[in-house]
Image 1: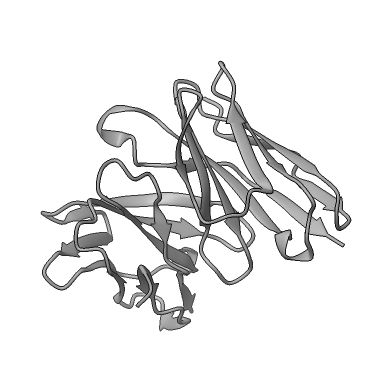
Image 2: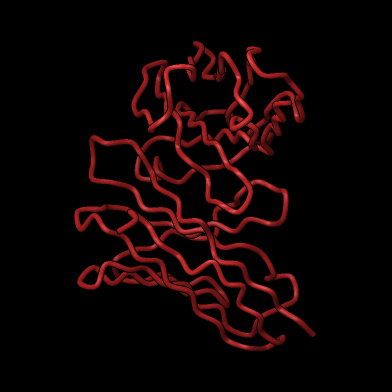
Length: 114
Length: 111
């Protein structure tokens, strides 16, 4: 079975631009979460979506937004990019039931803002 | 106090050694706990869940101490391939979907 997939794998943008990152969860998983990870730190939670509804939002500015589609894939959008947005953006999917909190990560999108 | 704290290390141990990491958390109502492993420039991979009764998987043992608000990960008979960063994750009480990762503990196993 395919795991979580993310695109693109790498991206270089300049300050002020906008970026869209994409994620496809494991087949059968209805929940997708987004994380930002900078070097030397653990992943920081940005959003979680379940059945197309936002379930949780971390402490990120409104420049960050996301959505989930009927096929459970998801997009993360970041507007007005800042140098500090350079990071690895991770998507994680999880299933329902008692394992709903066990998350499986995609390989990430490495974003560099110049 | 940070929500989730881990000693960043690195823990430098020889092959065959036993090593243990702790992860403390501040919210006493936290409900579920996990350990993830992350190799350099790769995504985190779920290592094991941490149950109240403890959890063992081969050379790995995870335990939860609610009274002192920490979880632990014990690795026995360390292998070179165990070298990685180990991240703990703490999930808040039901209704608040904001999991918190620690910054990770770096383990280096040398020959």
